[in-house]
Length: 199
Image 1 (cartoon, rainbow, N blue to C red):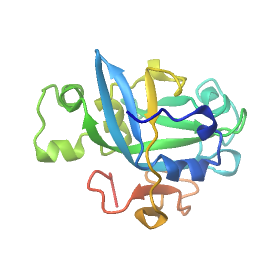
Image 2 (image 1 turned 60 degrees about the vertical axis):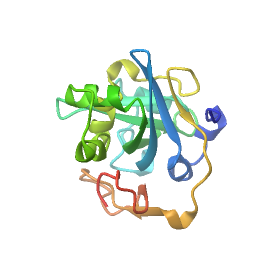
Image 3 (image 1 turned 45 degrees about the vertical axis):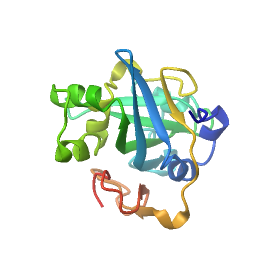
Image 4 (image 1 turned 90 degrees about the vertical axis):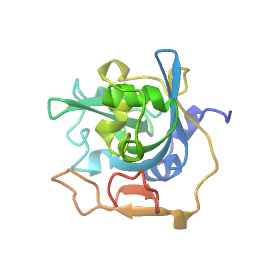
């Protein structure tokens, strides 16, 4: 198994880290099973200069994990029914994070299918859509508010290092589902990957 990403990785610039997360593997221990997926799509939220960031107007009880410095998992509840997971980057009080938008399932797929569909097996279409969206990813990996603030350098939820993608393999595009800072090309995904939520 490759090594977990060290804390210093998460201290970098939010856009650099976002691109470098692509192709790496996020792992969570769930019911004794390790769930693992390759990160294929992310969105960067650049703190106080980004009107779409939860941290734009400063620290609140809801977003305080964003201000605790890189290497934490920021999980929030949205639309009264879904959870979304973000990798916090930078230094304390930066308020910067990266939304995990889509993951390519690798290991623990049967458990992911149970979490998402209530059954152990997934057909080809279900597999493609298993983690192809931020809420779908959280459901498949059983990530909820209890995981907010998780230390990503620990043994519960962590990201495994892998080789860096070539720049030509990464696509930049507009972020999805936001109403402010809409023209910024801060969504990054792996070119021609079928598990991306939207191309």
